Length: 214
Ligand code: CO
Image (cartoon, rainbow, N blue to C red; front, side, top):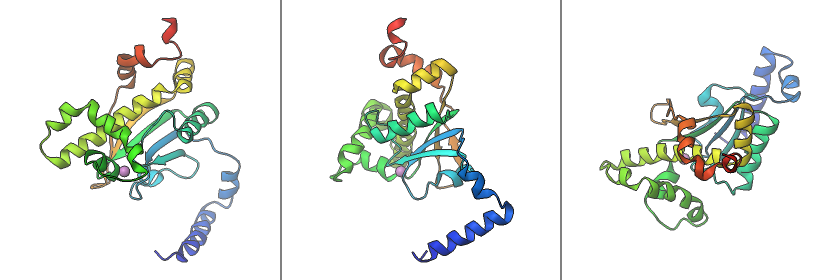
């Protein structure tokens, strides 16, 4: 699309919304109460609201290269804390995707400048699951599996965050979900991670809220 057309498209979009509901933007301006925090990849093909069929106001979003949850990332932490404590989202979704350039790059080391240090977190996931991954002979399937294992590890990283643990113990929320978007088919895949039992396995290491009291 031509750059200039974007503003024409915006005017059309405004007109469409108002033709259905004349108070559409007045309602949007009144505030947001999203039930979901979505953490996904910056990849232009993985459009959060579109692929979930959600409308403006329904999902709080954070995106970065390869959907990483780095617990010292101030940007990520601010988003998660605001979503959990203020917006009181019920669900946190980590959504990876097949054909992720970041994941492929992490499996084939090369000098990528600023991305070198960012992708080390993904290489850690590879190292943690090296046995399983190296046993997969088909390269595409191996990268696909790292996409899935990365989502699982990032879900664990979410529960490492102290204010997520506090909210979890106080209210039972947020529930954490690991998904993969298959860009080849458009399908959203729920990895069906049982985060209660997964966290249970590593609680004695990462539980900073109750860990010292039990
Ligand atoms: Co990606």
